[in-house]
Length: 267
Length: 276
Image (tube, rainbow over all chains, first blue to last red):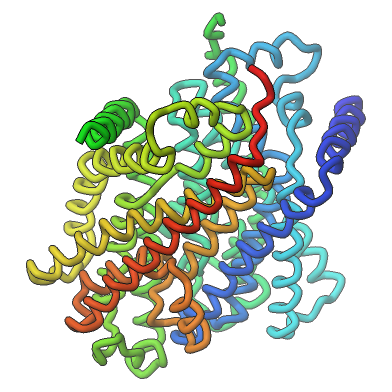
């Protein structure tokens, strides 16, 4: 509870600084909205030329992509900056500051860095998610809304968990942030389109090892999976929130093991 | 003569610094390979799912031949290698130096700031070609079904790439000078990267673009960085188109040289260095 109160204070201070310069503050959202707008335009260009990909149409791919972007955006607001900064903190020894405070170092790291840019991701993802769902005539019954919320929570936990896992590698060795980039910019690319694009081996990796398929593929299958090829079992859709909890727990475990290995640079 | 030697030395120094980062390079190469693999898989699936009667398989290149999956894969591999050859970090460096006031040190040097950074970028590019682009290309040839063109195309491709690298540098350098007007360079950089990525054809080949977007891309310099060298490599340009594209590349370079000169002139007049 105390942590939450502290977080609010940090966010207040953060917004005060950022709002001092209004124009850049709004540009932060705007640039991301335009950037991802171009990504959607890219999907549109490709899918006007090739109307189906493994049985998925344009609206369905947009729905799929938006689930990824939405959960990435939400998890980015809270986790992107702290974890992308972790390696440099460990490298120059300023990580020590977190260890001597009367607070869990992970919680402290997270509450210290908030990132409002990612609201841009969330805004554009919600717009396209709603538009594609309308085109696909998904009926938003209370049950369907409940499932969507559950899926998004699970997806956010997976995105956050994978960010934590790939960042915690810096307790063992430095990769100049390449390990975290590899996950959020590289591996995440694999779920821009349905995972049935790839062969069995990669589907297995994306389902059981780096479970990005639970971020958007299986949840999307729950709503619009009819008549599509579904690897393993369509029942996996229900496992999405569970996958989120497992990945996040594993990430915290790895973090705790890593932090025990941490030896300050002494500077 | 003396200044040529100086710029050569600048380039050699930057080559030495660029060589120092080894572990990160391996990771970045893997990242690039993984991303390219995902892209190539998507194109395979698109061609397989939509069949040969889909509008995409009917699209013709400038030479009038239908675009095959092999063409598209070769194009994507070429674009990925091109990125390694033309990349520049100059916009971040300029931003850093303007914000900290270190740009004053550049003003003191008996060298053109633009050429100074250009030769730094060139040095980095040379190292990147040897340590990254070559092994990466070798891997791609093994992993993907890539079309190998004739020797003439390869030579013209390298000539076009050299101009593309200059063009790419000049675009980022000129926009980097926006920092003199206290514009947030982060935004300029992000904006430019997205716009360039889209309209250069580095993400989706321009031949798939609908008419109005492809016309829009024609008015911008970006396609001369990716789409043009890649098309020359693939041999989808005839001799006339190739010659024309070289001329336009040159024209954009001259235009940007003038623009950066203007920006530099007015920017340095505005510049105030806050003590030390």
